[in-house]
Amino acid sequence: NQIAPSFGLMALRSGAQYREANRTLESMAGYFPGTRVVRGANEPERIGVVFAERPIFHVLGVNAAAGRTFEPGDPTGTAVASDEFARIRFGSGPPALGQTIATDNERFTIVGVMPPSFRLPYNTVRLQGTLAGAPVRLWAVVDPPANPRTAMDFTVARLKDGVDRAAARDDLHAIASRLAASSLDTNARGLCIALPMGRPNSLRPGPPRLLL
Image (cartoon, rainbow, N blue to C red):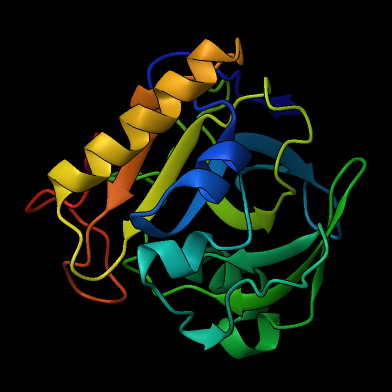
């Protein structure tokens, strides 16, 4: 198994504090990429799995093409599959719903299938920087870090209606200053804000959707 390390400008610590203290964000969610080896009747296949907090699809404003995306009460192991993975493994989207994918030490239950155009991480279907460069096949529920010093590789957030970018920057920078004063390890530059723009089921290059 492989989990990408949390480092660099996009790694955000103290996510719970940002979530609780901000006044400008509707919702936020962190995620990190990894790879897993799927076992089954076919030859073992290494796939990309994006582990994401439950609000991720709400933040991005995207819906499943079949089934649903994550809900607040979903346990870890709940997963949404890519359109290609569902077609290769089960013929199409609907037959994939409820299916269990077994890896070396985890089991993922598919509750939804995304549209063919959906991409997360953005602009790629490969997990750059991982040894295998495995195609992203699943997005799976992960709990928020219990330790505030544990970073999520990426964090995205959605602005509240009527809030502009400058107000969000000021709000988040104020939180970062308070966290720094309290000696909590944080990184204010690691939070991206998903603007309410673009088509609901498509994340493709175009006008900027992310801030900070």
